[in-house]
Length: 453
Ligand code: GLN
Image (cartoon, rainbow, N blue to C red; front, top):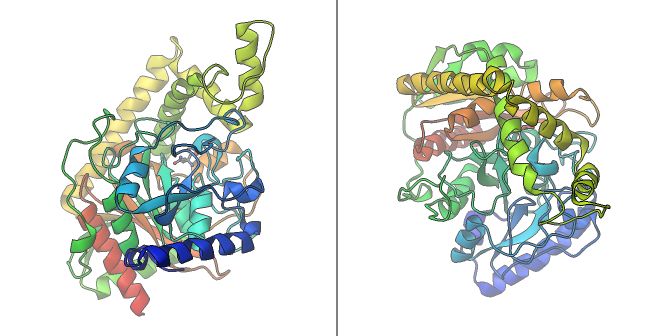
């Protein structure tokens, strides 16, 4: 598949041809189930005539049905464009196809989607990761030039790692959330999933920037990263030694591979320890579910999508929500409502906020001593469908990604090789707030060394 960098050089006619070819390819790879239109036998949704970019089903595109892959949003048609869609249009990029996801972005497999599952292009018996699994499978499967995803606790980086592409979670506030259906407002960020690091920088430059309509959008001028991307800067990179214990052999090999590559190119590697990652999981699943329970209260059959009528208003709410939401979403609404309830608020929610602060201090302390942090993205390579059935076990697979969201710093995941079984292995780099330049310089350097090997 042509890269975004190459696509940006095409003229109008060539883009038209590209769009036609892509439509054909998408049809050929229907079995992947990366696009919701493929799962519902509809024609691919398009918006404008620009370079086609696949968009996760929780980002508003005017005139599209945007459903967060949920039953409750069936029938809802978006009346407006998210800021990222407007920013893409200004750069001649157009939303093209909505990609499958875990319902309301809650999950790590894309298997909780109302529409059915998406397959991992590297092995169809395995999950593509989630929640942005459709976006990652589309890029890795050669049926998207690039895609947008959202990352609340790893949903861009983890599917990118499972499928073998690049995923960037920007600094919180760098890319506007206006038009992104909120899961956990203090953690969510939209970001690119691409074929390589340079494309991630290019797409990030296009979607980043201040949005006055979004009070969580950072009011700072965005300096483009891509034109200054430099693989030759020598950086100090901290490896978190005590975090490696939980990773499988394959993943540890991948990290070692990345360390040797970075060293061979003159980067300095230092070893550090961090607060046990079990605290990340505990704090994240309290804060994320608390915010989700509040955010999802708006889906009640009155304003959006599906309504199941009943004899009175309360009955209508109960029936609509009972039938509209899937099991995982209900589980999180219940947990979130519980931790916010008056008797437990201090014991769970307030305490989780304190732990969040501690985790943030931890990351910031290490990022004062080093330019970047290097971590695995996941404890294992992509697992098989049905392999993890216990929700708590699934939550534990997020140990390496959620700290970054609690802290708000940017992180990028990129492929560093294959396991013995031929499955993609990724690592992630993490930088200081608003320092996507150093982050992507480091990632570009690592990618360049590994490609040259
Ligand atoms: N796997 C995490 C969760 O289930 C991350 C989700 C996300 O980033 N949207 O919450």
